[in-house]
Image (cartoon, rainbow, N blue to C red; front, side):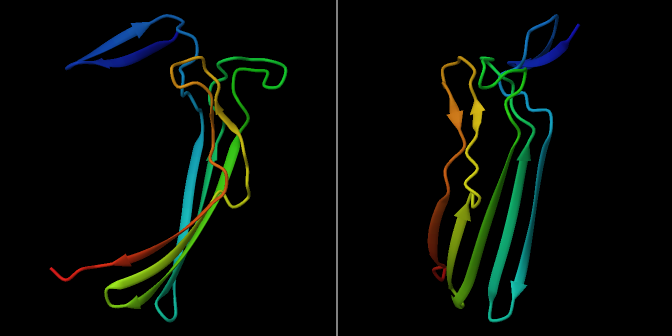
Length: 129
């Protein structure tokens, strides 16, 4: 028998019984990152995110079993201080282009995949106040 606690208004309600899998039940996650300050006011960073796979809302031949496949993404960024109040940066998300189905439960949100690789830049300017 499984029990869950649910926050309902100002009260915490305990529910017992077999409720099936929860919509966003992912057993294991791991996130870690590293940043380094380099010479000439340059900063770089790398981030890795791992998920063991969300609950499988619609088991089929492509995705059998109780959970969807595990997934890992890798992100990079670099920035340079141009002047005391101006910074230029570039960010690369999902560098390895690992596409994966994150959620296939039949809910209002429908199916969700992780984002494809993305590259974007920033020019930050701090106004004197």
